[in-house]
Length: 141
Image 1 (cartoon, rainbow, N blue to C red):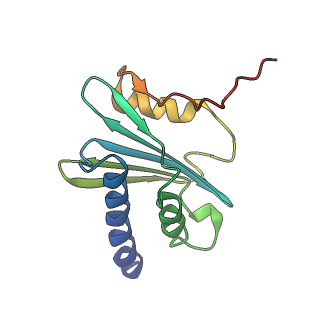
Image 2: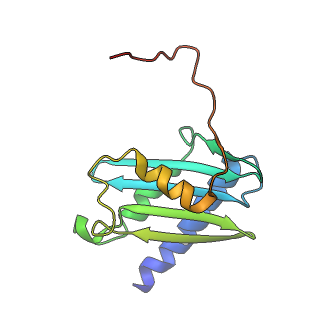
């Protein structure tokens, strides 16, 4: 257990540095919500900016690799590995919460799960997402 914490602590610090870089320097108010399972990871990054919460696309970062590394520190049994990581930077310190498959079954797709977590954390603050790319289109039924 001590070896895992010796590795996990610095890795969580590296995640904080990556988040700071993604949001332009000051990580205070950053919230990372990540779901992970066998063969996939889905990180979402938000920052509380007072009146609004802004989404930052983590696509061009190393966050997914770092999350994989943290996930693989857990035992080989997938049921013993966490399925949700909530990472917050507050007052220049990071706070991490892990949820396990018996608490959150991320293998069941639920588009509302992340929104529920955001509402619990940020209340009714509007969440600002970047505009879709010009090449995007909406499919109609």
